[in-house]
Image 1 (tube, rainbow, N blue to C red):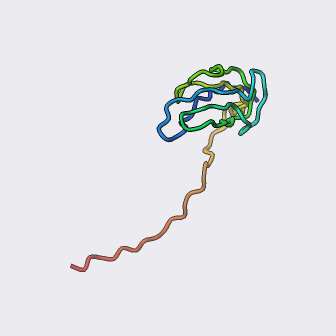
Image 2: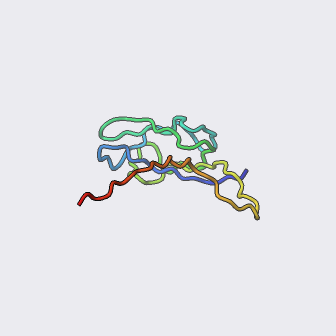
Image 3: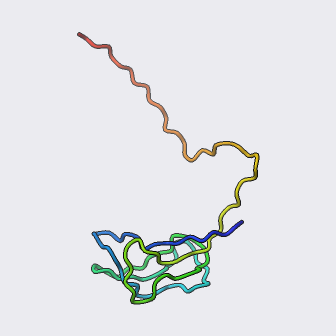
Length: 113
């Protein structure tokens, strides 16, 4: 498997909030973390919340320091994550992503005019 760097940005925390202050990092560069592990505690005008990690991987870079105000959408952390290698040449086909919904038959009535 190969590794790919993924940058996670400060998500929209709701209620029209446009920024948050980093209170405390729960990880450090080089740490390996799992999906949904505590990542960072941030404070908004409404409350303090711990944001969970969206990915499992190794922390490559923290983009904000503690006490820094970060706008929604700005980078928070970069992870190195495992990704599957590309398929070998010559393999062709479509992989179904979800099952198709069953079709319903509808009988239309002819106009009565």
